[in-house]
Length: 287
Length: 258
Image (tube, rainbow over the protein chains, first blue to last red):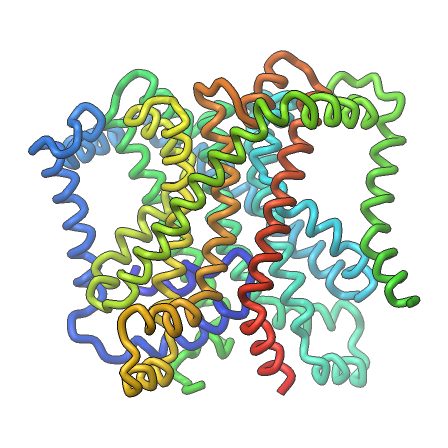
């Protein structure tokens, strides 16, 4: 939680964000109060504020339960099998959708990106399909699949697929022409070229794409549950809200937030591990 | 001349092929869920570009614009304040990251409790949901202002609002625009989602209404309308960004080719 540079990376790898990510680790050097202590203080202050404001009547208590009540609702939820089932359902839809989107995005991205003709041929179509909001698919998902898991998957896959595809397309175009000529001269076959040239070049982009896709996939999984009624945290939230269990509603919102943070942290860790060889992750070299 | 033709051919080729494939594949379709494209387009022109344009599409766009504008102005202002001080930034960052990690649509039920079900709630939902990417990107952009430029400005005695307008905002603007672009797609999602709960008009409301009454062609047409809106807004955004950031893109190109 101490680094946030990559969390604010834009949805497409604009040079600003990539440049920012590459230079920022050098800014971490000298610190008076450690970032983690400051950040912890911030979180404690938030909890204290949410505790105090409703109690002294600044916020209406009916709608804003103090954090102690949210906390006890959270503990109560955590003791129920139903809650953990909902978490498992949400994560299952998320993971499955993300996996499908990632594989499809990487394969198609490499296929399309490898040739200039296919790249130019598909550019306009991709530019048109990508900004279509995935929630536009909700009606047709409901019509076709009802509240089965397929309707959730449709939304998750559509939303996260573009994140991966766009990044892979950028990545494949980033190939060093000298390295490319070298592989030709050495007579590497198409498969070996993908394995030793295209994939390592595109990997940083793939990782960025995956991290963005993972966040989007979670949003869409919960949204689908909330709106369509697939089993999961979103449905639990809708039930809690409509039965007037305000503290539980807030508790589930907190849980989705924690899931979101976890997804982000895990993917950033994976990114660092997978790219430990890459210059952008070895930030102590002065640029 | 030929290169222009080539580019047009490349740009239009695949979309035309796909549309033609959809048209012919669905032409005699009797499948209830996949009506012929001609019916969908009829519905699009008659319904969505007809009476529904003023009744449903316009209110949606107005709410979107209001929420997005509030979020953009508020978040950039707040982001500049937070980004300027290292201590404030460190203090608030985990909190902001947490709020950003909450999937925005889950806020709709809560905001419904607090603010009722009127237009105000929808605008607040849109604003609250799309402010986090803008805010966090602004903080990051302000934080990363070039230290040489910053020192130079200080040496020349440039402070206050001049410093803000001439140094901080321009150098943070690539990041701010990245945040604004992310915020826009969140705003469109929230525009639709907020209308699915207890609304009486709006694009999302009308599409779901069509779906619930099994008006399949109209449902498809509504989805096309949403898609067109998304594409239109993304294009508008790109035009604005290209104009405002022309200096930056030129700079990047020069740096890359050198």
